Image (cartoon, rainbow over all chains, first blue to last red):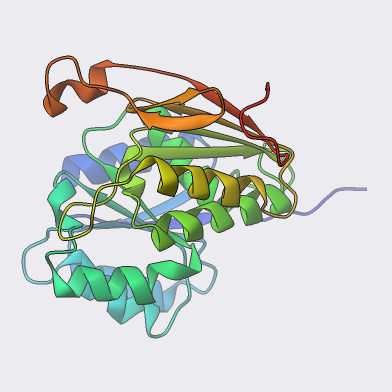
Length: 139
Length: 118
């Protein structure tokens, strides 16, 4: 008897097209279905339109709308695990009331993680699979 | 391979790191059949919080070892070393900027006895 399984779906939102290409190629080879958006607003709409979403990869610093804004907006309607990806470790500082509030209120459920650029692909896989497991549960 | 219970453990470990304001971007967590591996730099996010001290690190690792389903915990921190079951900061040879160049390993089983074997 054939065993059914669903491939896990990831949406990546980052204003750098080369980074999005990297995510798409690496994680697709790993077996995930990956959708990408270089625009935060479009990314939010993609999340709304995607019924089966397992993980959101989210850049912190983007023009127009920060990753923290996108995170709050999406978390208001979808409890999806999030992996923040940033080249700026100081994005996460208790000097920022916004970060302190997000950290203590939203991150506390354990479904949010952080990855700093640049990163080896192995670290990306560890973070992604540490949040949602392998691409399909039949692995 | 991550089973659901391993993912639950990962999530609980992240909860503890958030509770202690640990910079998750500098730490990787892998759990396989209840065996946790931690590696990277163990430090708090920048800002107003006091830096981690040995008592807090001991408490953090103790809490991780006590999580349901955890059989063993292996920690390979670049900036902390396990000395006789107690964690202490790895002294930087050339200042804080060079901490990432120094690697140390600590083992901590999922038992009440700290740091006794793998």
